Image (cartoon, rainbow, N blue to C red):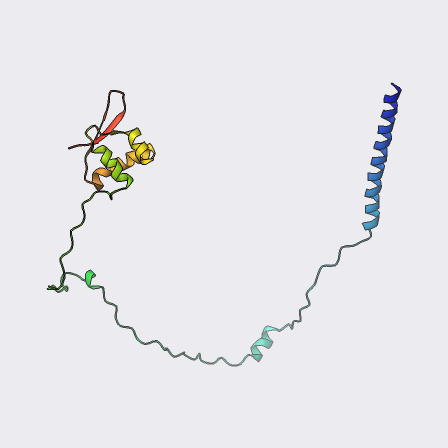
Length: 176
C-alpha cells in the first residue's frame, strides 16, 4: 500500500512540474515578443501634379479635323450562291456525257463481323434467340439488345417477332 501512495505523490509532483514548465514557456514567449511591433505597411511613392479643368482647357491645342485613313483593300466580287442552291428558274440543264454511272449502294444490312450482324444471324434461326442468348453472344446489356431490336426493323429492313416459350422466356426471331 505504501508503494502506491508514493507512486501517487510522484505522479502529482511530475504533473505540477510539467504544468509549471508550460506556464513558464507561455510567459517567456509573451514577455519576449510583447515589445515587438509589426513592421509598418509598405507604401508606394507617387509623384503627381494636380491640374484644374480651366488650366487643362487653356493648355489643350485647338481640335483638328480627323485624318481619314486610306483603305488598302480592294473591292471584292459579289457573292453568288453555289450552283446547287440556285433556284430552278435560273438553273441551266447540264448534258454531261463524260460522267460515269453511280455504283449501286450495298444492301442495307450490318457489316460482317459486327455485333449487330451476330444478333441478326441469331434471330434468323428457325427457333430465334432468347434475350439471354443475345446478351451472351454480344456482351451487351438487356436494354441495349432491346434498343437494337427496336431499330433493326427500320435500319435493316427486318421484321422481328417476339413470343414467350414454355419456360416463360422472351424469344425473338425474324419474321419470314
